[in-house]
Image (cartoon, rainbow, N blue to C red):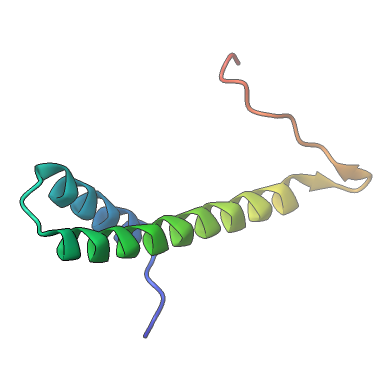
Length: 74
């Protein structure tokens, strides 16, 4: 099976959360959905970590890494 793209995984994760929150599923269905949600959450986290590493590589200069943490105040 091909690995999902970040956007696809996030969209599916949002669907699962809505279904679980609605409370219309059996316990078994809820557990299956929760398990899928955990897998998707880990996939999304992995994709974000990979993207962060790529950004850090792109920001490197000749003398090392010139990265400033994002504070949201700039």
